[in-house]
Image (cartoon, rainbow, N blue to C red):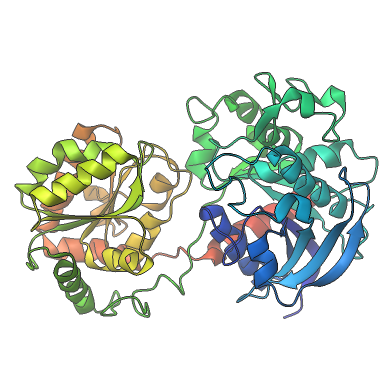
Length: 490
């Protein structure tokens, strides 16, 4: 199917799967452009040429040499394709900024690269050039979509450029990361001094890349409708709630999708047994296999609670140790996979050592085990204090593992609470609690355990979740409608 030349999108990202990943943004950067191209949107992805990117892309070729980008020496723009999907990539080849050991944002010692402002100003500047009539390419985007603070200066550069430019979207994946740097860098990075004001890039006495994007972009998106509401107030606005509330008419929440090829219990190669909504026998077999693998009592009737998470305060998992002894008397089994704060790691390891037949704690990350927990658990716990979108609650529903979630962000947007009304009308897919306290979590777990005893009702909740559409196609359709709306109003 030929691409529709009427909608061309430059998608700017600091990371992309499978080339480089530090978080969920990398998955979005790979999946959303691929899904949009299935709807005939001509999307091309711009990213820095880190060593792993340069090493993995064997088909890259020189596309242009860029001038007037505020750095010394040549900046090459290379063309390549993303392995697997074939999404066109535009790669910035500037070894002085990107060819170094360590991560894309931090060095081997865990410290931010001291020149991160310059490194990601270059990413933003190249995005602005390609989004303007000064671009050396024959391909000119109608929309430039920026992702998180690393490309936040692009809308500002385009705003102050005398050359006509594309419309801009600033997409927020997590407001907690704001890209703040000394105010003295404003003009050295190529922004006019006038931009450093409350109505501009200034943020509590510093220059913020994220605020630049939020202030100057034509439109703002984030990764769920509820999170779009939450960031207009404290505390989740992280100091930018006033600006976001002022721009509420230009703010849209669109829930991320998940990769249904990778996360499909009927075809998942990481599972001992495959299964589907129409035949759940394999799920019971996966529970047995998980209990055996982790040394838990192999009892099909004990409810098994699964957790796959960073072990942090944000994820709400500090609420669990206090109530775990009472849950274990129910009895239940608990499986934890993750890493994070040392205190939480120690709490869960101690719990596992004290109750080896009922609790297993695996510190670290294991891709195969994460799939096996989603398939083998009866209930998934995700009590995040805030969660812009979240993925595991969607994986869980697809795997017939009703999740327990806190009423925040993408969790409340993607889980339908098992109230009596929702059970009766056939929409219930999980359990939601409103207060992020030990009491709130404990009460919700017991509500789920009570319904678990009613297996016919439980099967309906499982089936409802497994039949939901969490594919990227749904998200791509919403973005396509947004692009069309922006272009009509431009």
